Length: 102
Image 1 (cartoon, one colour):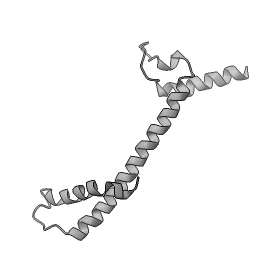
Image 2 (image 1 turned 120 degrees about the horizontal axis):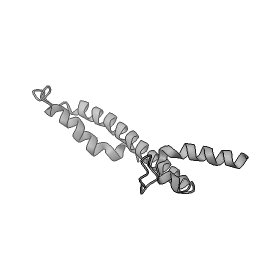
Image 3 (image 1 turned 180 degrees about the vertical axis):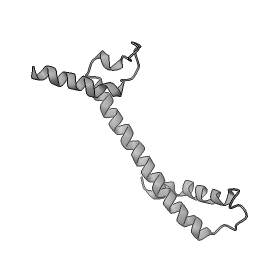
Image 4 (image 1 turned 135 degrees about the vertical axis):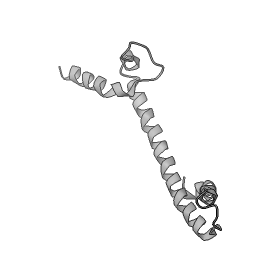
């Protein structure tokens, strides 16, 4: 993706700034609004890329968790979850590493 992907939405966000109570009495400055939109679009692109990265690495953790056995799906209260409890992955990997060296 690129910032250009987000420009339509970013322009809407920038334009809405002139609808806020504290700025609604001002005439919109189109050049300023476009400049604001470019910056907002860049942040939107950064956020979208971050979300994609999170999903990618979460998927890798879930793939690893599938090899750790059923314990990775068991909550502290004993209930079984549909997805792995990612918080448990480091401890379970550490246990496996200890077993492998003994």
